[in-house]
Length: 315
Image (cartoon, rainbow, N blue to C red; front, side):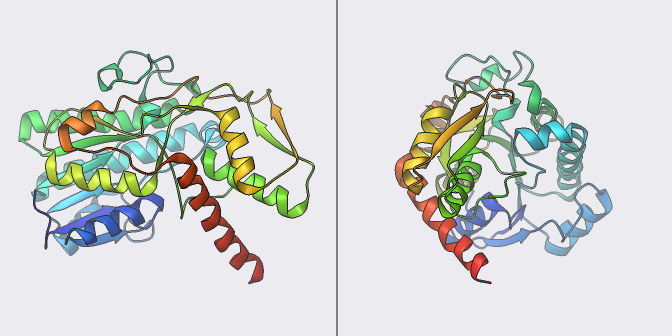
């Protein structure tokens, strides 16, 4: 699909990934409408219909989601299921009725079964129950894949489904109550460095593994998929590199210059034991490969956090 001069609505377009996707699509010539949480309530069909009437998009990229780390998912599992399922279900149906030409739907790596063989292959999505701490969120997102495939079969709806791995980078959410692991660690280590705290406490025992993708790489993947891919299969979007949480902590400790102790709180959960995606489908279907090395990406993220956090302290 040639998106030059096409109107593209990006739900969640003012969020972390959304800002980068908006910039990426504008660079390709699209007329992007980035939507924030205060623009339309995507849980309400009437407001979705109003949004589509207001902007008449050729494409909708659905990134809006209620997201958070393990603590947030454990505290509000019902809300994580309801909000994420309802937003997607209503949006996909409304776009079908309105004749939107294409949808790009963001899923989540949390949809994979807890003990999926490494690397996670897209064909394993339905082979077990997700990790318990974020299963409601993972199931809500997976329902949108089922809907997209069913609508393609019955109505010919061109809706594609991408499964981005854990993202990080400038502009991330660094709130300790709702951040994901890289941003949360950067915040903890930086705050401890500035305050001179003797130790930083982290959840679990550090044995779990994760895969991380720099946010500008993820945005490029969404653009490439929008331009080049029109199939029913879900597609992983990741780097293909796996790191233990313990090694991640050591790396961020070095990147921030913190010299204190790391304490592991083993009364807290590790989350899913391992995560690493198979990335062959993304390369084969639309030519995506991650390019930003992890060390470079973390350094950029620390630098960005320091700049914005310093501004906040000064004001």
